[in-house]
Amino acid sequence: MDRKLFIGGAWVDAAAGTRAEIADPATGERVGSSAIAGRADLDSAVFAASKALPSWSALYADERAKILHRAADLVAERAPAIADILTREQGKPVPDSMKEILFGVEVIHYYAEEGRRLGGSIRPSSRADIRSLVITAPVGVVGGIVPWNYPVDLYAWKVAPVLAAGCTLVVKPPHETPLAIGMVVQCFVDAGLPAGVLNDIPGTGPEVGQAMSEHTGIAMITATASVPAGQSIMRAGAATLKRLSLELGGQSPFIVLDDADPQEAAAAAARRSFSNMGQICIAVNRILVSKGIHAQFVDALVAETAKIKLGHGVVPGVQYGPVLNESVRTRVTRHLDDAVARGGRLLVGGTVPKDDAFDKGFFFQPALVDDVPDSALALTEETFGPLAAIRTVADDAEALKVANGLPFGLAAYVYSSDLERAWSLAERIEAGAVGVNVNDTSELQAPFGGWKMSGIGRELGREGIEAFRESKHIRMRVRPREYRIDGHSSTSCDR
Image 1 (spheres, one colour):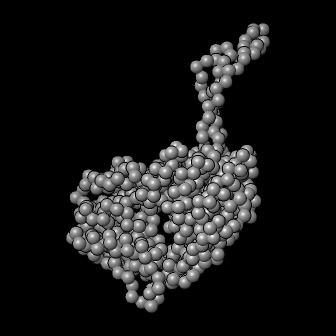
Image 2: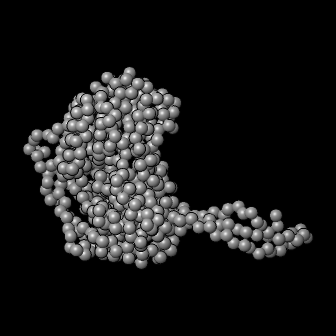
Image 3: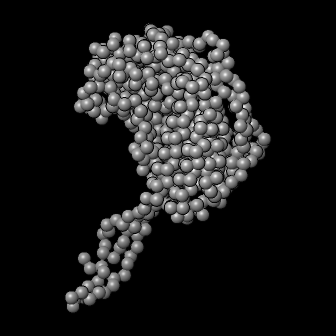
């Protein structure tokens, strides 16, 4: 697949003619190529989005909903083909790619309907002749920045609420994985989306992301990115006081209390640690285990991790594929070596598999390290790869202290057979979402986002569309009108 930029309703080459080759991270084979945008392409896309904004924002919400529903239906119809491309460019197995795409379909349908529910209110007033109306309006042209780990899913998280809110959009999809997104964009085109409403320009963060954050024609940025990238967006957007919705990195704790089921907790921890090779913002980074259950839990987790079989994601039955590129393997190896050097014990994995089937790909055997000290990189930074670090805690108080001890707060997990005990911890954990006896905190109708340095703003739920609307207060004086009721005179402004 060889794709172009999508600007003003047309597929076009980059102004500078720049292109990038996309290779399969499992085999190194060519999957396709993509045009790579520059600042001139961003200017063209913002111009197209600005031109389309008045008519799109004025379109009745039901009409916008019809287009979004049709686009979602087309994505669902084409999901097998999109999933194949997604697996070949990103590495995750086809079943995970399908799951990602179909959740994106749900997101688009959901916001199609949420857009129809946007309204206003009449507020109380201090005077009888005054009416206070509060309405909302689209924020304007929005810039979207999408990461490479869940490109289709997180594309839907941004595009659907922005369009349903009546805004137009310029998206910078990841230059590493832009191909499946190109197929999703075509679904919106085929659904009848007017020209200029959605513009899609793959590019790099330092060039297009930076330019987008600075651009005077963009009113708001919605981005899923690393903490340093989020900080860069905030600095660049400060000059124009851009609205921001930033879902940034995390360092998620997985707390196993001494009354938890060790087998259940271990299976959940393994999946959340190593699904998509740990390249998930809410992946488990540090496992905090009560000392009374430590031995049983670790034995179960080692057994779960040892069962993981790597392979090419298009092969039936494969559940775990490669990491995206060599930089991921390098980072994981650095965190692993640091943990061991500081006294941690490698329990399983941590090697590059030696086999002809893996030689040309970016494979790495998922690793577990026990007795990791608090100073280790694996317990202080986001690894974003297949490594989980284990730390023993004496009691619930120490678990809470360690869990809240970092400047990140995206997600956390608590496993216990005592729901009151788990609930008490969950209320005190400093994170945007906490899973209690469940290893996924995402829920379509609930807000998703981070505390502290893990971001600002929320996606999903009603909050995910309200972010793209500006409030407006209309205060007006009304003239009294007389009415005759039962022979008595009254006015519409009588108290």
